[in-house]
Image 1 (cartoon, one colour):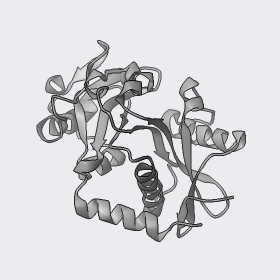
Image 2 (cartoon, one colour; image 1 turned 90 degrees about the horizontal axis):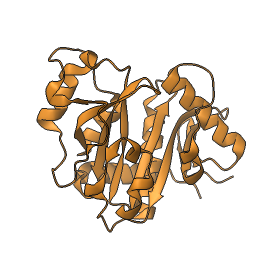
Image 3 (cartoon, one colour; image 1 turned 135 degrees about the horizontal axis):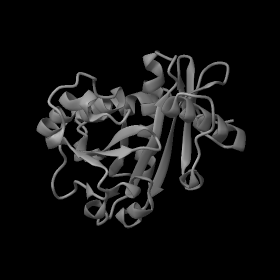
Image 4 (cartoon, helix red, strand yellow; image 1 turned 180 degrees about the horizontal axis):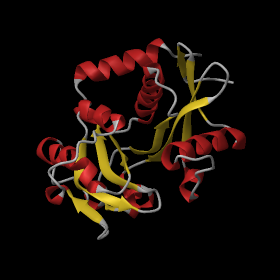
Length: 242
């Protein structure tokens, strides 16, 4: 079995068997629905499923990656169900959609996220991807919980008009209309994207099935600060296994 790489107690690889995929889907269900079960949909078939495991083989983090040669395929992505992606469909460079990114609720070791991002960095470089995108989940569907976070996103982190997606459904919360209060913080994963130069849409989508508000999130690889890019590549190269 060949791993992408490892660090400390954790190793990263892509799921190769039906059992490994199911382990990823079970973690997804626990993280997104809060109960035991299997989270699966038709998009799983066309994706690679990153899995981070601990020393006893337990899957402690996962993400699914949908690789596209260029923007012509963005309308076949999971995200395209909820956002009008016409503005990025003209891209001639490879794109990766990252979805269902989650870490086991009882795992607090920062090395898990480091290993996951190291594996993603290696994949981005191998695919020569220029753009990463997906949906960031805010738990629950009450926008009053996230008013401050949404207004901060609107003030500091909106994407460029030329790329930012338009609403595709009327089940949206424009950031400009969000309550001014609400002290719940941004999800840690979103903070990571923003620290790397990522940006967001100007609205959140209400997803009743997932019981979440989600926000289109995009990272242009060329916009990652050089120091952060160097650190990520050093992590990936320094922990690679042959």
